[in-house]
Image 1: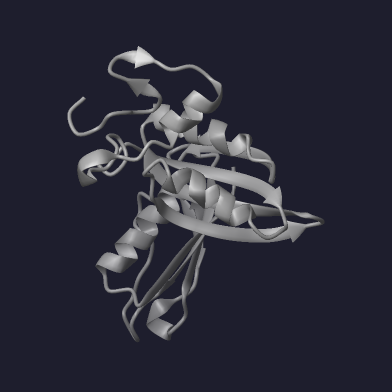
Image 2 (image 1 turned 180 degrees about the vertical axis):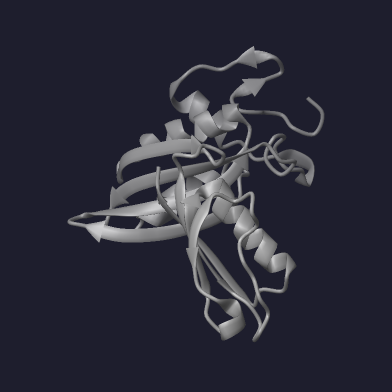
Length: 190
C-alpha cells in the first residue's frame, strides 16, 4: 500500500484477526500525513445513535474511536439523559467496511450501552430542522422534500421542518443557498 501501511485491519493483503492486533490495526496512525482511504474522499453518510453512561469520559471515549481511525464527524449532538444513560447522535462519512469497524469498536467500550447505525438515506432516520432567513426573505421547503413544516420567513418567523434525515438536510441546504442566517438539524431517532 502506498502511503498507508494499514487499512481497516488489513496489512499488505493479509488479514489480521481479533484482539489487540485488530485494535492496533484499527487505531494505526496514517503515515506521510495522508488520510485513511474511504473517509475524507467521501464514502457513504451514516447516522449512529449511541446510548452511553452519563458520566465523565463517555463522550471522550466515543470521539477517540473515530479520531484514532481518521474519521471526522459531520455532526455530533447529545440528547436527553434518562436515568444514568444519555443519547449521542453522530453523522459521519465512511466506507461500509470502516463503518462496521467503528460500530464494532464503539460497542466494546465499557461506557456504551447500545449502538444503532443506519445509512443517512434510510427513511427511518428521522430529523428536525430550523431555518432562519434574513428579514423579509421568503422561503419554503423545496417541493421534492417530503417534510412537514411551519413558519413564515417573510413575517420574520423561523421555518421548522420534520421528516426523514435526508429530506431535512435537503431543506437546510436549500435555505443556506438562499442566504439563511441560522440553520440547525437534529436527529430525532432511528
